[in-house]
Image 1 (cartoon, helix red, strand yellow):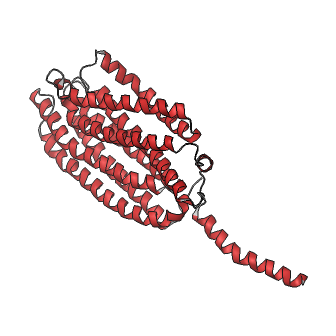
Image 2 (image 1 turned 30 degrees about the horizontal axis):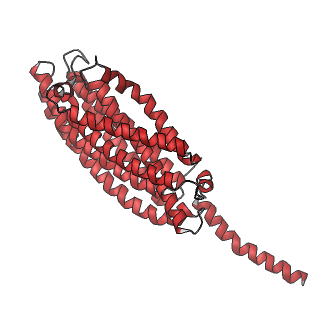
Image 3 (image 1 turned 45 degrees about the horizontal axis):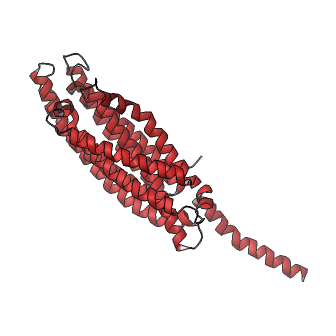
Length: 338
């Protein structure tokens, strides 16, 4: 089992964990106050499901971030570490957008006499504090990421040959795999909000969105598998699916603001918009890297991708310390024989 070996690795884990603990504590407090003061039937209104959905997404988002942090440090993958800083920016945007969205939800419920408006006054400081904490966490994580970049600089590619073109191919591969990991969260986040909050649940569109969750997980696993195996046909199929996903999110983004459908999305339209925009950007980046990765097939990268294990810093230190002793031992042996 991997155990961080440097102070900067521990610092990165510590900041990520502290940020997650504080933000989730505030979200749970907001949710508890909201739930205790809600007079109407739970789940009866889309607005009543807004705060529980935000809390659920934050819980999943931060647990997923901690998994990715551990994974990035274990692989000494600076690309994924940089990606985690950008992921934190995404959570910051989500935390900022939810303030106004929750205020609207509370005011809507207050008009129906289902909640007291004072609950907004009590919860507002905590909701404002959340993006501030995430912003501070992002700055700290970015600073530590810079140190980790220097620390892991030679470790990332040491099992790749000195060929600069091969290193660039491996870099593209790492970026692509990291993008797949982040695609998963933002697509799932959008889908969960749509399924839980959006009021129009009788049409085929809703059923297809619900069915897309397991299909997406399978597609992302296949995307990584085809890349490692350098399967041209599989990658071409995946890229076509990416274009389909891009069309889907563009369609949903436009549909949320159409006069005939916008009322169904009002309870979470800002959050859905932020998730849709971030996902569209990620899909465009994923398509670009998928095409480049496919172009790099059969150029010698496959053996390096297959053997992805990197030595830990402790192993490197041991090897460095053993080399002089070993050389000295060999020299003594030769002198004795002579």
